[in-house]
Amino acid sequence: MNVLVYIDLQNGRPRKSSAELLTYAQKLSGAGSVTALVLGHSLEDLSALGSFGAQRILQVSTPELTHFDGLVFGQLISEAAQFTGSQAVLLSFDHSGKAIAPVVAAKWSAGLVAGATGLPQGTRYPVKAFSGKALAKVNVLTEKIVVALTPNSIPSEKNGSSVAVESWIPSEIPASKIKVLSVNKNTTDIPLPEAEKVVSGGRGLKGPENWGLIEDLAKELGAATACSRPVSDIGWRPHHEHVGQTGITIRPNLYIAAGISGAIQHLAGVNSSKTIVVINTDAEAPFFKAADYGVVGDAFEVLPKLTQAIKKFKADQA
Amino acid sequence: MQKYRLKRDLCTFVLHVLGHAKSKKSVMNILVCIAKAPDTTTKIKFNSEGNALDGNGVTWIVNPSDEWYALVRALELKEAAGQGKVTIVTVGTADDDSIVRKALAVGADEAFRINLSPESAASVAEQIAPWAKGQPFDFILTGKETIDFNGSVVGGLLAAHLDWPYIPLIEKLNVENGRATMFRDIGGGTEEIEVNGPFVASATKGLAEQRIPNMRGIMAARTKPITVVEPQSYSAKIEYLEFTLPQEKGACKIIDPNNMDELVRLLHSEAKAL
Ligand SMILES: Cc1cc2nc3c(=O)[nH]c(=O)nc-3n(C[C@H](O)[C@H](O)[C@H](O)COP(=O)(O)OP(=O)(O)OC[C@H]3O[C@@H](n4cnc5c(N)ncnc54)[C@H](O)[C@@H]3O)c2cc1C
Image (cartoon, rainbow over the protein chains, first blue to last red):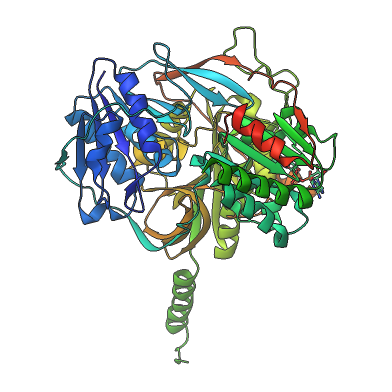
């Protein structure tokens, strides 16, 4: 089938998930084609998207698209899907993808898979359900389909060569009814849902002044930081770091939890992480049952030691 | 102050004051979409066909972000405006009336239940959109996602069907004279935006604080109306099948807290996580 991949720009550059999406699209398309669509002005040479499997790259680069509007972007993607004769639209199940995917599905009358975690068998797409407490398949009954892929679901593969970027002119660019007054970006942070490594702290860290321990380790690992719900409820950490059933669900390669007990609601948001390390003074903490590696010890001593050990490991590797 | 001559001028005065009050105080008419969800401590198990949750022994709650953030912020805005109405709508069967009562106890004024057991977010949105269309709602709030299917797409579908702007993940919302300003989470930052006219937004943490219903609220909820609306015909686009539980982790390897080099070695060579 022909697949249209929406490539989201973050700070003017294709998001990290782009390579993964294109790899997925190439496998999904079989004998069909893969077209990448970029909306907005890019600071980076987009032709490199070809090396991950895009056979054609379309770009709409007008100033109206500087600010994100799910309704406008979704309408343009629906038109591009029509224009390229696509049967599937693929995008990332992240902040922008969650706003665009439903619009494309509604405008284009397609079945929607929200949060696919892998390639389908036939028309059945694997997803998670019950906030990570279960797995399921979404069977798509329509011919047209919108797939929103959970970040870190499949490894990306370089498989192709650079392709010229075509400028595409849609029939109209709908006027946005949303006016952006200001944007506040913490550009240095790795967005949590996309992060491959995450270091997370709980109430066991006793207070916000101790978060340096978490941040130092995260910095050494190139990891994002997260926290348990009470930690963000009391305001020790910002809300967007709250992971779990009522926060965000993540599936990094490595999740390190310090001073978190491992309540069922917390586990729901992190238990599909590939490797889980738990640091807790209480050997009976429920989190150890969900962990791959456990350290029974005081986070205030263990975290700096671990940071040191990583530093040493990196120096040895270099 | 101007002098008003009796009778006729008194009328003018009253109208003047009323008009003034009206321009300052707006009437809020807000729709909040709520869903039923299994309590967060539920031990998940499935029916023998593996295509639905086994509901035996499950306690149902109002989906947390619908109740804690969307509904409570709607109530706060109505209270601040001094006049208006917070309406809730759910797509579900008579079994869901208990969670609808719970939302009424928190403070919603009236409830509608579209009588259908939804099989996907698409069916929820395709029922609510035509029902809400043409009704004088200022805006519609949903929670950021349900904790059972985690799709976070009902709001977007609804907005697309209504052709209203959609603002996902709002953590602040103010409305004055039909002008709404909000902050939304953009992943690694926030964006402050303004919308004039109706919109759909999904509510996330920070928008409001959970309200525990008090006795008065619970009593009042008993007599508030739940109107049952018959569903529109509609064809399913997807179905959920093959529910399974994730594989249990193997035994956890315990590492000596004084030997973090060993942990790093295992993370590198065994787990391939470094
Ligand atoms: C409806 C609902 C939804 C919820 N959703 C979420 C959610 O999305 N995410 C979430 O996280 N929670 C959620 N919760 C809360 C959850 O039930 C737990 O209360 C919460 O996860 C506990 O946070 P914690 O582990 O940081 O704190 P605690 O449970 O207080 O645990 C602190 C841990 O730190 C350990 N500790 C103490 N000192 C040290 C030290 N010096 N070194 C190392 N370890 C130490 C202790 O042994 C303990 O295990 C939800 C609850 C409800 C009712």
